[in-house]
Length: 137
Image 1 (cartoon, rainbow, N blue to C red):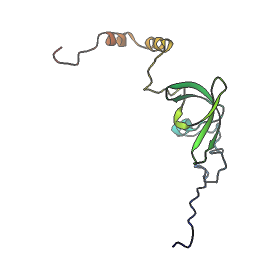
Image 2: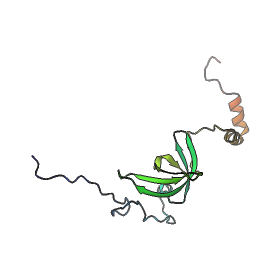
Image 3: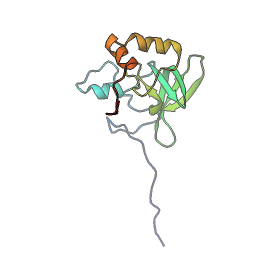
């Protein structure tokens, strides 16, 4: 019925240089370069950086070894855990230590102590004597 086959293969290209990529993305971005767009600079992850890994309740400070495009054209990072184990993960499992997750709650005693130390006297009073939410109170 059709005379020719459609070429549906995808050739990954760099989002900055528009050149074809091998297994690496954004190799042209210099980690020492400066830009006015701070969001862009914070989103670029370089090999050697230490980031926080969070996935399904597992948390660890990991080292970024390399990044590459997987067979589906998705950017994945090869990370190294403190015990030396390595794993490939997507970007959404990684966050910067200076950009903590506001939804994470302290669960260990040292984390709870640190959180309490950061509270002011006024905050402690408000926690211990909360305002009533019902007009009947």
